[in-house]
Length: 312
Image (cartoon, rainbow, N blue to C red):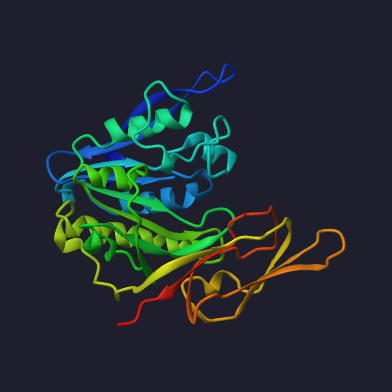
């Protein structure tokens, strides 16, 4: 039985870029027909690119074409120039694709991608699963809960779940406002556990597709333990640039730490003087995102994202 990956039909949609390079291309893979229609995206932010695409590849290479029950569209590399540069945003316009919806057919590079995803990407789609992740400079471990999409979010083996802000300018927010059931997954990134995280995301994708009837329900993996609900997200950023030395490595992502726990330090790059310490701000602080490697960071760079555990 042929796998979905082998039977995928690929559409190449050109996007004008620069005078030197002419046009880039957005690739959409499609297979199947009818309902439900599902869109899976990855690489909205370029520095998160390979990990979501890897999880999609794992999913598609493990499912037979005859096991598909609906229509599936995938966009594994949603922001090609940003991925090539290993940056959150494309260097040609520096716009955040996940704040650019519904886009503009005559706008800048990023606005044109948003327009393509908001039109051709969402055409005939009932469910949207948007894969993000820590990426090349950090790791993270949570899933967003969006209105009407809780059951979809619970398909993913994430340690934490966060209620998403209402944001129509993101892909999932825009799709949700137009009636789609949506979730956004924030799991994985570069580190020793990247293979395991990609496998967990692929497993979550399969569980979600079985839940909504897009894949034969007999293939559904066992249910996962529910994640811990968290709220009051806090982003820690350095007040100045320097050399960042982590106190916690990638193995700590998805765990809880006590208030005041040392997370990392910032040092002057020449004198090595201690400039700043990063410490947990909550009594029970959930580690949603952290930098696991020594790095040179600029003032204001996202370094940690933590949240307070919600207890009944």
